[in-house]
Every structure is written in structure tokens, then in C-alpha cells.
Image (cartoon, rainbow, N blue to C red):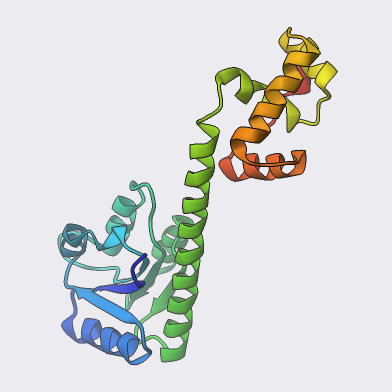
Length: 209
């Protein structure tokens, strides 16, 4: 994975340059863009990092860019930095997932602290996505019946209960359980529960079995 980058999107050359110099002086990578559309065209949003984003810009505003990025599979953390931080705009930006909303001229330490927190958040989110993807790949090796048995196992049901609920023999349930554990490379039900939680798989409802 490439080094994280702080992307500064601001149509004000002075503000854009000042923030870029500050970030680089703090030992972090920085790239700047004069418009939201320039940033979108660069596809920088697909890389590790965070965005320091102005609110009022011609053609596409900061909130509009946030809205557009929100449609992607993953959106890196956004810090709004603006001289126009009215309450409704701030509230809407935070509601849609912005990490922070700072008013220009922002305190140097506050901005750097927010940037570092955003980069750490992005790194953690991306690591979780990689882990979740790996888990999904392993789960896709299961047959539909094995997957069904698995959801009953993580619900805490006994083999006999699963057999009755699915209309199969208890021995068949045991075979499926064993193959699930083998294919997923785990040894305990506790591990299975944790893996399913990471993948967002819900336990079967015992009342429907």
C-alpha cells in the first residue's frame, strides 16, 4: 500500500498553498487541487489518505464533492476547512461523515491533529476492508448447505436442533460442521462467530428452525 497523502482541495491559491506547506513541513505527503472536479479527475480519492476540503468553490462545492464521493465503495476521511462555516452546513457535513469542520484561519496544531487522526482512521478502515474481503473469499468456498449450517452453529444451536430445523440427520450436520471448520481454517465455534461478525453474517433465528 502506498504512503498516505493529504489532498487539499481549495480554489483559493493562498489558502491552498499555505496548508500544503504546513502539511509537508510536518513530514506528510500533500497534493493540492484548485477544484473539486480536478480532484475527481485525478482519482486521488482511490488512494490512502484524507481530504482537507473547502466549502465554497465554483462549479462544484465541497459538500457536493462529499456527496459524490459518498457514492463510491469507500470514501476517505474528509476535513472541512472553510471561512463559511454556518451551522446548517457544518451539521450536514458532519452528518454525512466528515471527521472535522474547522474555520479559516484554522489553528495549526488543531489542523495537524485532525489530519493525523484522519490518516489513522483511513489506515484502520482500509485494513478492516482488506480483512473483510479475505474473510468473504473464504466464505465463498462453502456450499449453500454448509453456509446454512454455519448460521445455525453461530446461533448457538446444538447438532440435534440443527438437524431437526433443517430436516437432515444429525450425522450430516456433523459432517457439514467439520467441513465448514476445515474450509475456513478455524478450530472453534468462538473463532467462527468472530469471523462471521467481521463478514456481517447474522446467526439463524432459532424460532424459524
